[in-house]
Image: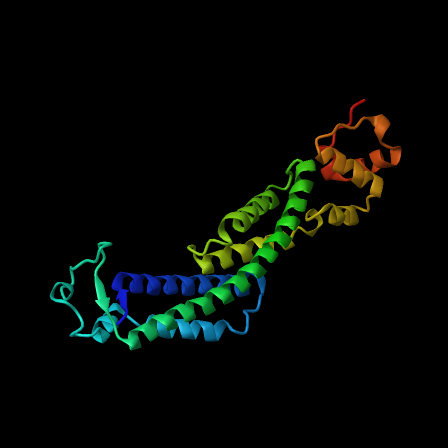
Length: 244
């Protein structure tokens, strides 16, 4: 009869519980913050895991063979060569262990799918936030409220989104609040939005981008039209300095 270490069995149960908690976190964030849809196998994987988790250490002990131990093995404190207590268990318990491992694989597969979708969302939003931060840089961060929103979104995307040890409901609440503020500043989300709102020429936008890269421009480098466009946009007039 095969031997299975009770500590190992409990460790596998704990791993399954952790996998299930991870799935629940990513699913809630995916649906609540990014309007995502969970994979079709999510419900069945979660149900299988929850059923397997019901197996407790007491269940294992109850199913252990009462007469299958040597005298020194029947005591709870007896150790094998590795220092861990061992128990000889029935084929039924071995089946439970296989079910635990199978359930964990199902949960992990679904979680990996959702994680992939979240990483894609993170990449897209990071690109958008970076574009807005670049524009804020040339404007000298004049809109303090929007600058704070961008900093917060950057932190949520880089530090908190993929941290399943955090609170999913808290992340969803903070992210949705940040997105609401983001949507109130459409003209500051990128150079394209800023250009469209203020009807700027392509040459003026290119000069603005040059300045955003900390490169200097002189009056000889820009046209009169560009200077006039910069002067009529309050954010640019106060942020841009041209050398004589």
